[in-house]
Amino acid sequence: MATEAFEDIAENFEFLDDWEDRYRFVIDLGKAMPPLDPAFRVAATKVDGCASQVWIMPEIEGHGADAVFRFQGDSDAMIVRGLVAILTALFNGLTVAEVLQVNAAEELERLGLNDHLSAQRSNGLRSMVERIRKIASEAATAG
Image (tube, rainbow, N blue to C red; front, side, top):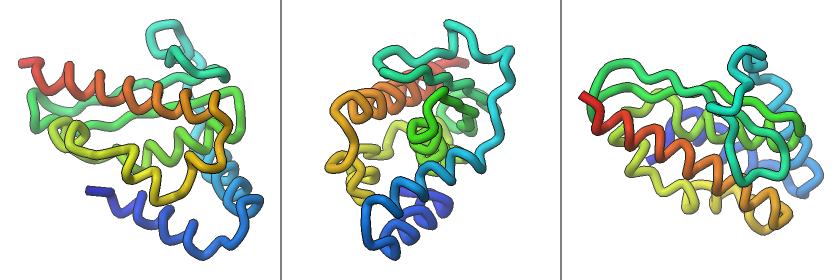
């Protein structure tokens, strides 16, 4: 259940032959993402479990399971900023119920990221997904 934006990224990955090109593409995705307002770079939005600093600022429109999920994110590391952009493409615009149905590990596996990220980066990516799922879960049960 991937968004069109994520499918576009997956298609681009298929056309890139080597991992240097794919890393550059991920970094370019991060560079193209608007920066997070410094006012949102606070402890409440910081993702624990990442070697780099990462912030995720949720924007939930509506209430309950049908609320639309969006987030802005940022990182102090360019490759991680690109990973945030990929997660934005994967989740933004879904309902919070749909966010909880997305098998992020399976979708990200299509990009082959786990085979080419360091253990710390892979753990950080998992931490970002867990944070997104926690936010969606809390929004889904909020009245």
